[in-house]
Length: 265
Image 1 (cartoon, helix red, strand yellow):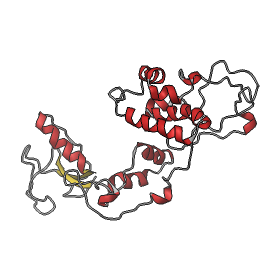
Image 2 (cartoon, rainbow, N blue to C red; image 1 turned 180 degrees about the vertical axis):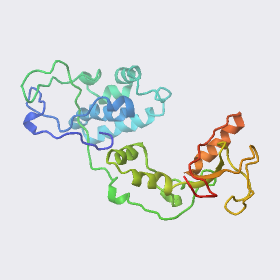
Image 3 (cartoon, rainbow, N blue to C red; image 1 turned 120 degrees about the vertical axis):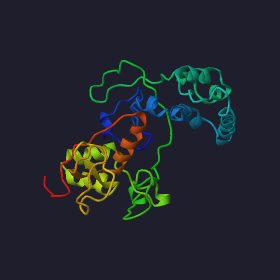
Image 4 (cartoon, one colour; image 1 turned 30 degrees about the horizontal axis):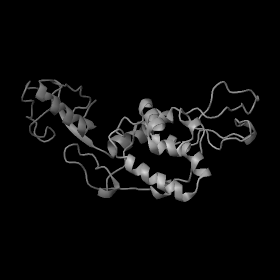
């Protein structure tokens, strides 16, 4: 829920309810917390109970104190861990004032199954908090570029809209295109419109360095002496990688398919 993604919709009568008949508006998967580490999400939900019953003036004073505590040595990168949470909830003056006692172990409410009416066999953490529409909308993120700056080493488009860079086709986008069978579109996106490069290789599989074989009929490989020079298409970053691993005395050979001189497969 940190990104506002809704996985399913239920009717209110099918939602779990408490002893007073109240149903939650949003049910959040607890697995979202360890991954994103948004501990403030939990604390705001717990503090919401106290915020409902207190005046705004008192709440503001407590929040100012929270801001001071935020820079304390204990609130480090591991503050999402359970022992740190328990420490703050039980011993920190801010949390002891703001969060009710029955929420300090993150077990608060007995809920009942909305479909069967049976008691859910464990207590459920509940809270009150704001959920508003995110400002990140697709219409505000539309961006297109036809030409623009490229990176000098990889010859791929630069990253970021601020430098007129290109948008990257990520793993999920790649899998989506593959699942629809759009192999030509995928090749165009991640190869043709990225770092398309033609490279000459010898039949021995090593990179060819010398005069253009399509012009010079005497052009040959300087390593094996072969006149069979081929041209292949590959991402330029592959060539960069091959040259980098050569520094570790690792030689990568390429299997050619197209011969330049007679243009035969």
